Length: 519
Image (cartoon, rainbow, N blue to C red; front, side, top):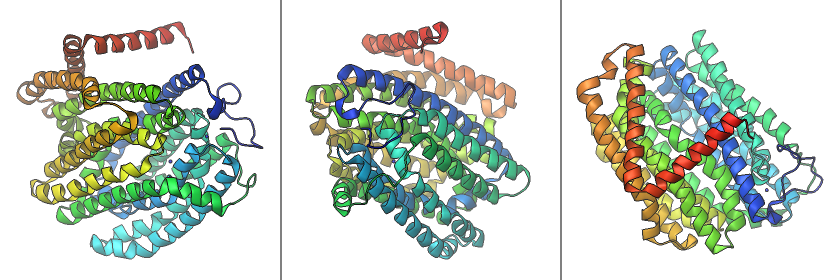
């Protein structure tokens, strides 16, 4: 953000305790990962559905300016969350011995860091308000400062559940958190609380996150001992991740500041919602990769053949989803957002279409990063961060005069550069050639472009779904999505019959389980 730890209550798996990762056999690990991927996908489906509905409703209740104020007020949050929550937790997932003491150590270090970061955010909140020339932005920043402390409390329970392959977290905690934020923010937005509805929803969801994660993990910080030695050992692994995450989030802070000052709060609100929608496919990839692939790669990295095959297989499946999703987003993203959110949010639609490249970058980046972390080569990820820093802000400054379209193109371009850099760095770690990587990616690229060439002109010159009523517009977009999927699959069947056969077999397997009621 795990091997069973001594003195631990029975784990909250599907049926008793999960096998110890250190002794898990090949067949058992494969079974666990298949079940975990299915449960993660189910949880993601719920969360993404909730996020989608929440976005639609809030867009009708709140203006782009209000959303922009919240985005500006929380501009430092993601940066400070990385410092508070993420890197030592990853070291805990990867650790193979003395786990109980390591968990206790991580908890107290993270808790102290969370308190410190909350105080830092509170102290800089007036400065944030001045940067955006808005007292409301500074007030929101001060109000959200406590979130750093609350997020820190969830760090160890989440990491331990991931370590144990305790996938129930994905179908209980994440949906509960998403539903709480949606319910809280929508209710208070309807009551006229404006930007404070988002603050209330955020805090309510964090409290639910704390309760649910501690309840499921059945862990307490008093079963082990704090150890400076263990902290130093884990810091060696986590420090490159800290640099990577902090640099990436710092870049995001700079980008949001440039957009807010260079354009407007309304543009920042459109950017926030556009980015949220554009990231839906990418976030699904990140969640599955980080929760399933990282612990799996950690267990098999010593077996070079299995490691390489697993990497290529994961990349092929993720790319088969990410590439067509990105092409479809370019084709129908803007009209779809206008139909769903209304004409005031057309800027978000422009951002969605131009930020379609984010999903492609995330797909390449996620698999590569999890492989490097799993192999204990996390320091290599700093080169990916450097690639993002060298391209992201310069591209944004160059393309900002084009408005939100330029912002989206800059973000997409930087994401793709980072993704390609990640694949290049991962090659030597997993022992795959450039040709092997290209063979699992090129067919989906060609098939997606073929489908795009059919649907994009149809929408632009014939259908015009954004100029029709909501019902007719939604029906038109739905039909275009179905037509795109059919065109993509038919093209893939011609270009790469084996890839098409794998997809068809997977669909038949899933359908058989659903119809037959298999578990």
